[in-house]
Image 1 (tube, rainbow, N blue to C red):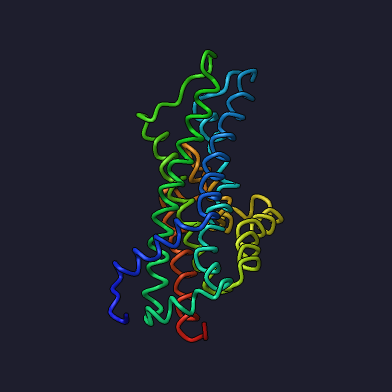
Image 2: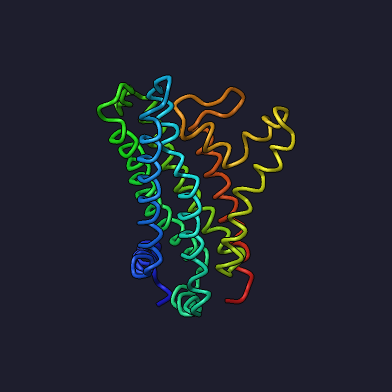
Length: 256
């Protein structure tokens, strides 16, 4: 049993992830939230004067990612803490003593699943907004436009990175409620702190997840002073790597 390689461990983690009802609930809620936000934004702009631009519609249609990041972040958390809650983690670590392999497999499986769900959700937000403005004078946003497709794809990537941050936090905290609370705090509290400094906080704000999402990632043109969307997503991946690294260190040295 100690001979399990990464592929076998990843297969086991995938079976565990897809067999838990919370996975499907959170994935479905993500797509529904993104799509519903897109529709709501489009309906709101139908009577907007002056006529909104295609970029405005897209930028706001993707704002459902504010909620989606918490849903997929919670998915990442539960991928780890769920086993601690049931005690299954002892069986997992007995079968695979190499704890870093277990965490790496969880991150790979959860990250891949979150990327797929995030991209579907992002596309649902885009489509929802576009369908809601059919028959109006508002110009359509075409995925053939690199700025439009970039915002849609990067939003999905951002959501996947949030799920990986959840995996790391789950490994550090090990308790579902506390870990999800910590994730919520990390996503929203820095925005409040930066907001206290007004425009002078822009240099710090470009490192804050929620501000990166709303003003850099899920937009066709980032606000001046913030990182480009792809840099923001890479930064989120860096945050995830740090969280998972910390989780891996603690997982290796703590009792199950």
